[in-house]
Image (cartoon, rainbow, N blue to C red; front, top):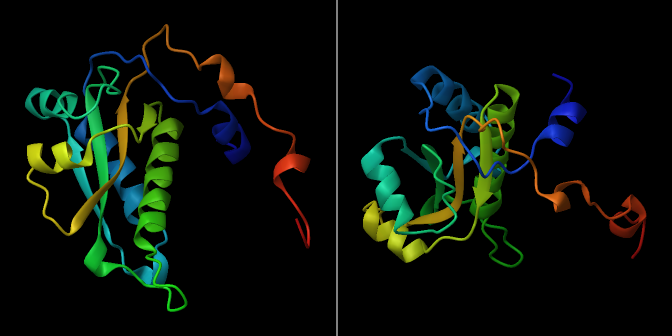
Length: 172
């Protein structure tokens, strides 16, 4: 698929069938996240796959934005394994985890799997429900599955600012 077409057609799916993702489908998505670039190749991402009734029920205690998806991927980062920018101490791990999440989200779209990137979750509750170690920081949640036949993007999906409002050359 042409990348511009993929990027344009991808939207946040909020209505799914109840069919779970098959292991081979998950493997493709996870591999794409695995090969994503990270700061100095530290690979601080830690990925938790939620693909059982039990794990999805636990997830529902942590967010109202689960959209009854049959599968979810929680992307965390290990704060102890991040490249650190020497000028201000900024960690690359949150950026790395976002790149990994984006790779998986786009791979999912390319193989017919819908997803919605969810930031509205309770990190403390997620850590508690899934016994996540203290040095792993929950960063992004991809709820995913096969889009329901009635799934469609929200009206605001196609509304983007003119490029001239967000891109500048040489100075702001």
